[in-house]
Image (cartoon, rainbow, N blue to C red; front, side, top):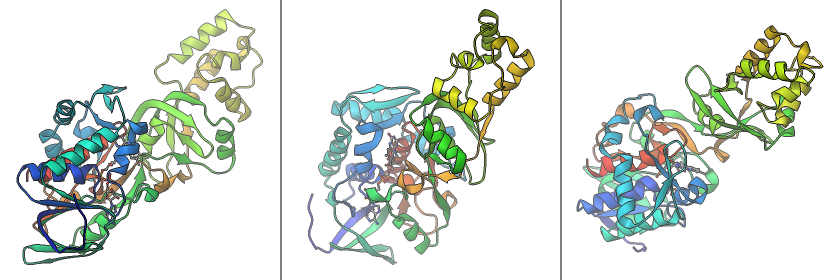
Length: 399
Ligand SMILES: Cc1cc2nc3c(=O)[nH]c(=O)nc-3n(C[C@H](O)[C@H](O)[C@H](O)COP(=O)(O)OP(=O)(O)OC[C@H]3O[C@@H](n4cnc5c(N)ncnc54)[C@H](O)[C@@H]3O)c2cc1C
């Protein structure tokens, strides 16, 4: 791999040395194409490195098209079917990278995620690919069948231009809207990008209340009319986070409520009724502490969300049922999200209506491809976004 201010000519130029771009270059190189990958960052695949707490949740064995959000829910089917989690696992196994399932089909490396980056870089190198870091794109033009990309390290001509520069999540890590700019330049539509897999923020009383129990977590079901997720919720200094909240944030629109079932999966009426029979002189808050974290119960009491009864003996069956209904359908209205600063992924992006689902090639401009997160295909939390990066890159490399 090299650098230098040369005028180069390659079969395929890849913009973005992230998961999708490197995987494309390795696969296309194996197929005999000459490739060059450019990235404005000093290091490749930084999101792979930090993902999954440094162990990279590289796929999910339950991957299916239902785990992705897109204006066209059918678009991802073809690529996902032709490159499955097991195809990626096979590559790790051959490389000797060991892994484990953590929960819900989420696969993580046993060691550091750097092992995956090393594998990707070695594969690109072995296939004769070139990697140019610290290289920014200045202009992109197409004349005849050839793209010319002017970069800060010279001009590069190619017949295939693969845009793999990701979405807008985490600008500090180098995220830019370059993919959308190139798409628009060539006449593509972009579905307005929005932060996804992102914590909710609150204002006023709710913010203060949630901050007062920052660090408290409990299993919930978080839902709206579009989706629902049974995972943990975490109270934070700014509002709500945790997997259930991150997941539902991808389906949330400003001004909407989210409903939280804090008693998900429990027969709370039966449990509280049994508690009342066994301990009639104990407080309602004590009974609720068998179902919810004690600090959350105190907060609910302070917010006036619990009936004012001294002892369980004084609470009627109807009041128990009403309380359980309230806690099972607890409405929260976020004032916003933490935004691009912490969003794990970008929802929206390049409109799939103008791309081939088989090859990711533009239907408007032959030779122009979009892969990975810049496309309007957004995975759930849990390894689905990397699976999309691998699968869309594979589709483009084999197209
Ligand atoms: C903190 C965090 C943790 C995550 N954990 C997981 C996880 O465990 N599992 C999972 O499936 N997903 C996870 N994700 C999401 C996942 O990282 C992304 O969906 C995935 O990396 C997208 O791959 P990509 O190659 O399309 O884009 P990226 O990985 O974002 O790569 C894009 C590349 O393009 C470069 N680039 C951007 N703009 C320009 C420009 N103007 N010029 C040149 N180069 C440019 C960037 O420097 C970057 O190297 C996580 C994301 C974050 C932020």
